[in-house]
Image (cartoon, rainbow, N blue to C red; front, side):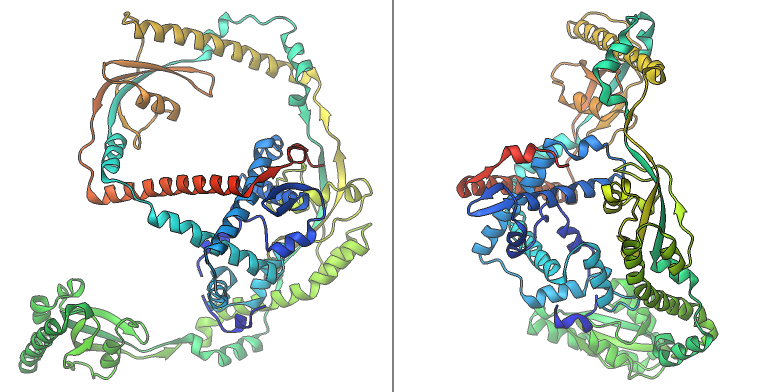
Length: 635
């Protein structure tokens, strides 16, 4: 670990997010080479991607999808060829880019890495200081060691720097931006006519055994997944915090030893008259600005009461000039950009006006309007705040004391949760029905816990799960109390809904046939009686009550001859006719919007350039893939 962890402060959440993007499924070379003892899934040059490495990447991607969908992802989507190849492609891309970046000399110094970790808000305590326990707890919760975490982060920063180079050097011609602006701002007047399957239901005649034939041919659609109910215990810092009762003597002691935290420091209300002359202005310009400030100061010495009026007329600070130069109250350390200003302000007496004060921005003539003295809040004023802090500390200590016992008892006395319940003095709770992919209770909807619950040792042998950290500072142990194996719903239970679904599909086909017939007649110029919706103006960016597929089709239409017609088959099983009757070209795009559009286009072009670069790297490195292993589903 780094020595910095007790010294550094402050970070943005963004860096950690980078770690878990699709690229970030591998750690340092030595880590993966050390565990890559299985079969080789792919080779990238002389580097081999092992089956273990690939499986880990696939699981990470599946868990990420589950989290994004809050556990509602269809199981079939979580282990299909597209997802498996995407996981492998992430590993291949990372290896190629990392090798290329390192060859190009892209590096991250130890000091920069230390600073990035130390500034991460996720790792800071309530006072904004770096917290080693929080850092180590997070790293453990992600199944990593600090060394592996830091190695991954270093690689991700290198990759981000390398990718940003493409974005920063991409050029977009002005003519392309203008053309795109015209297209994106174009408006079209359109109407719709929806042919709903409901209108054709009376024409549908299903065969008597159509439902049974479909049921027999598609048994997978009618399977009920394996389910369990569990009893479980949770140990969390949050739970212990609710139970904690700080000693009043400890509250008083904390107050006395942390008095500086409860001080309201002195602040001073200031006004100024500003004469601008930044460092780039040159010597002559700064001398001229100084002379102007001296002249204003001499006038104020004769008539100090006219400071506010003088500020309104002569100050070059638009933010304060209209208010007579008033800057409000300024505390110590709040003007780090112009420390000379703050130093001069805190030397003045109320009502006093300073001589011109030089800063990197120019010259300031400062008046001290009022002083708000510092003071300390009383113990009663901050008692609640202190109690909350002490509760957190007590809960964290208690969690550390109980966590090992909780984990050990759940594992060593695995025939029952009672010993664990006695330890934490909490009765087990019983869950609702859970599948291998989802639990209704958010606490239990954790991929690692779900996998543990359905493991043979727990499911078949009626053992406790191990204690699993489902969130930072939260452990859960569970055991199965009821089990329903996978089953197929009987035909009679699904017959009515199935026959209705089949009839709706048949009606949808009739709607599509009728829609295509009408569209053909419209495009031939025939007169067709259609109850079009009221005309509506829409652009590619602004539209209301228009489905996206309809809008896309409306803007694909050739509008050289109006009206123009198109048809759209919608996912909702209906068919929509769309008519465009008018086209309105976009006005000239404002410069700021043109800049935004150019930036977005640069991103797209940079992504294309990166994709082309990766394709070249793949070809040069000689990537080979063991398709049999990739397409083989994991058990």
